[in-house]
Amino acid sequence: MIQQLSPTESRPAGPSQRAEWADAAKGACIILVVLWHVVVKDYLQIDWHIGVPVPGLWGTLGEQFLPLRMPLFFTISGVFAANAAQRPWRVVARSRIAGFLYLYAVWLLIHTAILAAAPQLPTDRATSALGLLEQLTITPSNLWYLHALAVYFTIAKVTRRAPRALVLVPAALLSAVTAAGLLDTPGNRAGLYQNLVFFLAGLYLRPQIQQWAATASRRRLALTSGAYVLALVAMAVAGAQQWFGVWIAVSVVAVAFSVTAAARLAHWSAISRPLARLGRITLPIYVVHMPVLAVLHRLLLVPVSGLGGSAQGLIVLGYPILLTGLVIGLSLAVHRGLLALHAGWLFALPGPRRVEAAG
Image 1 (tube, rainbow, N blue to C red):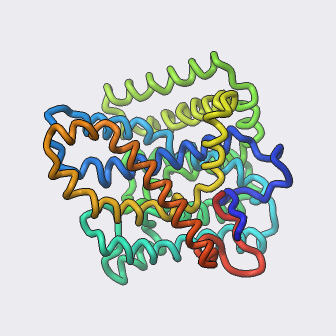
Image 2: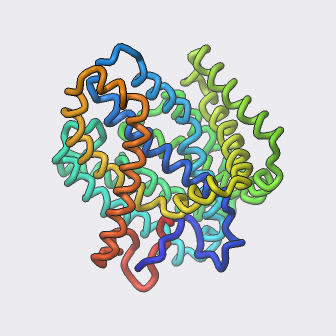
Image 3: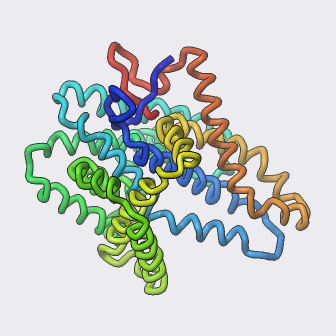
């Protein structure tokens, strides 16, 4: 069986080399990713006739994590990538760049085939050979995180000798320009453009981020959480979501809060350890959850929409949580089944040196 690791981390020599707060943060991120997809691609597509706006509240709640979810995910990925990015080009080119592109291409083909059988699921999919070629190259699919990591590692290696400010500032400008809607971003290009700065920040500022986590206090948690809530409220009241620089500023606050919260959460092992374990196996959840959700959506959409108001009222509040847990559990079960069938090549680049994939 392949030992699965974080997609941007070297194989650790021992537990002390891997910060539990970072794995817990990744675990929380993958839960938020799946929850968001459950809400927008399944939950909000159901015909709820219960007379109260609970589905809309779930949608609104999910939107509050948009400045947090992927910026934090890429910041942690950058922290884990710091050592790997220092390796020689030939090593990085195979284990990281080619490895992530391989995983992206393999799972893009799988997603395309499965999603074709679930046309009612509202998600990006290739419907022609040209569309598939576009998703493979310039307009990544829902698997864009893998595509982005390959691109980000390439940029990190090409610019490794450049002053950090000369790399971070243009990346921040690209993020701000994209969030302001000043660039054409079909598909998932927006995520690709907006999150480079967070990956590079994690890569370049790893010592500072680790120190921030190590010195996290209750007072800082209260301050950063308050700052994040105030930033979200101010952005919503002013309608400033597309004002230049606002999204990246709110995302920086969100990441500062999230790192603090994850570090403080480490004091409660009953919560942090399960999250950390989940954070070490993010790849199979990430690549498998959308096909699993597509199948469940096809099975559940009509029956749940056809329930009476009283029956829907019993499930409307907890439905996204239950379905998120089911999707994650089934994704991990599919992963274990595929490994048992010796299909580890679906999760790592075949060859003498496999990609250290998500763990």
